[in-house]
Image (tube, rainbow, N blue to C red; front, side, top):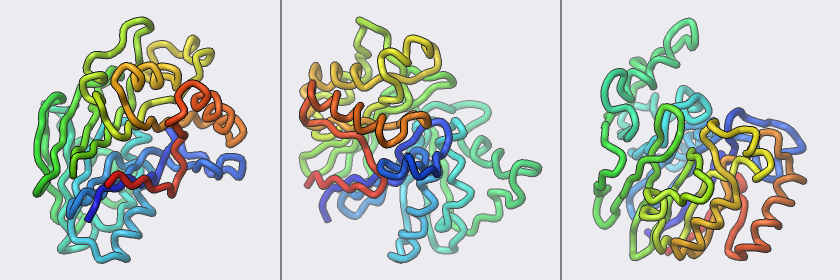
Length: 274
């Protein structure tokens, strides 16, 4: 059934439903990976709502949701993920940064409790299983799909993922902050030789100087890591809400001038790896 990656939400921080942002998209983080018979969703930002509608239309019966972390922009779409309310749908939610108290189940449920949301998670009709791992673990999903994880540098913790199938690999690396002059060894190991790497490119270098400690990185650091690790193609991701289409087009062009095999993620785009 092949190996493909589809972008359903590409923004960070807050949705941007503005005409000036629609060329790249306004929904927050959500990426779908189809690897053989495995349907893998990474993060549950507002982009997951439209993905859920598509899954219902296709009569999908199961999926695995990998969580990078649980800051609001990465989970706020979950209450609107329609398959989670469908009896017979099986959803496995994996988290690598919350082992302990509260865990991933309690954290996901909290945003759906009054007075924040009127429909509690316990009323979802699907079969939801929560799986706590430790960043750095490896595990398999079905036949022939391997997942590697890595700890990222982000407030409250975050996990990066590498999915391998049919001899190809895709790495999802957001949200993370770099340290100038000290490439992150966890990330370099995770993305080594990968075919497609998605990287937190929230800020330009100039913007980042005023946002040190916020937990995000730059496209220039993404390029440096991709070059050092022999990455075949780099995806700029987690676009800042203040970056409209004109700014994003300029950022993409600047990145491509340094690393030609690079592009900025756009909602609705699908990349086929195998």
